[in-house]
Image (tube, rainbow, N blue to C red; front, side, top):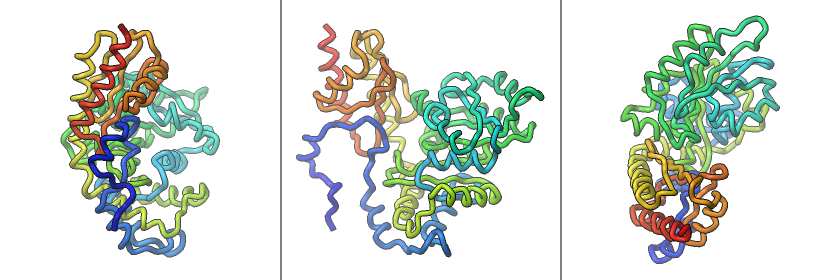
Length: 356
């Protein structure tokens, strides 16, 4: 069988290099094979066997009792909030966390409030967290604390296990559960050289996105205690998240979890190569030093904003993503090889030459 996603090397040379996100990854041939042969059933009635297998495998990988397959990590985070806190209660999280900057519209459904706590490289200030947890009769009750690793807005930074342990201990002492937005949890695990479960043990629930560096076409898993997952399953139905014969998609998720995590180190290495080259290229352009696969490029001294840079780079064959007015985000992934990094650097050099 020939799939349209495949390209030969001559065609690939004509295509732009896409560093906008690791969400652009296509399924592997092994994923297509598993999808074609996956046992399926009705996930909303008596269950889909491949979905059940994915939920069990994902929960085990994250060291949790049970898992729930959902369409996106955004829904997984929403369900974690719905299942563990009530209306008019407070969710505390770091001020640049994705759940705060991009997902707090969830309050439309939850009636919950989000309290942003300042932090460094995605790690909350523990003193501010302690204040939020203490509260008093005039403040909202903190019902949930959320962390994120790797941290999207902090250029893929990875929380230390010591920090996560401290957050979990502080919250647990107040009877407050902790949720981990682990959209790129496997990237964090590779960076720390530990199993994903060693990270996830410092939270009560954890979400994992399957469609980023792990390369599945879509989907996420929420994992945690049986009671929380049971409640989340009911909320998923209310939100329209029951997907019937979705085992076809879950099969790709199984391949993602069981096979694709180990190769993420290649993405991290290439991100560092890109960062080093950009930092040597031009004094008015600086790149973050990545722990994982995300590089942010600071253009504030260049005299041109991110939109202008993005347009010029695309004309030079490189697709990047504006990240605010003066930054670009570049994300390495499975479809980026060493030659692509060289071409990306050449594109930056070409555009930077125009600064003169």
